[in-house]
Amino acid sequence: MSGHSKFANIKHKKEKNDAKKGKIFTIIGREIVIAVKEGGPDPANNSKLRDVIAKAKANNMPNDTIERGIKKAAGDSNADNYERITYEGYGPGGIAIIVETLTDNKNRTAADVRSAFTKGQGSIGTPGCVSFMFDKKGQIIISKEECSMDADDLMMTALDAGAEDFSEEEDCYQVITDPDEFSKVREALEQAGIPMAEADVTMIPQNYVAVTDEAVLKNLQRTLDLLDDNDDVQYVYTNLEE
Image (cartoon, rainbow, N blue to C red; front, top):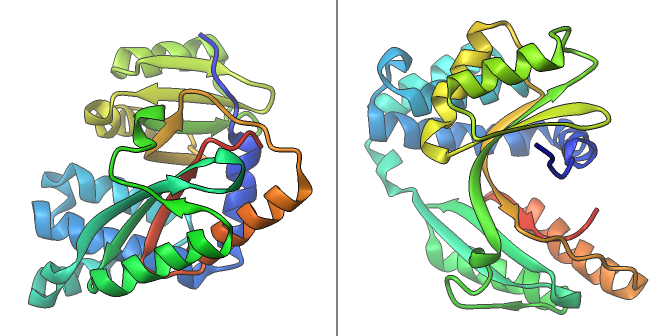
């Protein structure tokens, strides 16, 4: 069971997020709102909310901030105004880009995302134009530094819980699940006391594209930075080979 290690990239993103706590807290705050509106404010009866709470704690969001977010979402009728919109397109060098947004003003968000692509010499495409190159999967990353469990025992714990795949990389273990099984697997690992560096439903490229041209990389980074700085943007996925 082999996989493509993304732990170095994830650590880089986490460090970047650590420098932008306001951004990551905004992202998680909106996810709390949506989870509460879809399944109620009680984590015991709302697996999506439990997943978001786990993500919030992994990003060091204070418990009182999490609780305030849940209470606010439960009593805020305006929370229904958030809309999930996904954009797809190509960056320079033919790099596939998927942008997931959560917005209360789709016209503003569409203009901002289109501008980010244009400024990086890329282009927005139609829905489905690049998503077929990705697989939607639950992905759990476990740092070897933080996990003392034997690799075989860890693998069996994950597979017994319903994971599709388990791989051991140089610095981490990676658990892949069907999106519908993600919550169950994550909770099983949590109950087993296994620390998770990253746990989310994500889009995993079927193949990665290497880019060596510095000008292309610079333009691509410009697009990614503009998207990262936009509060409406939740997640950005690419098939760039890091």
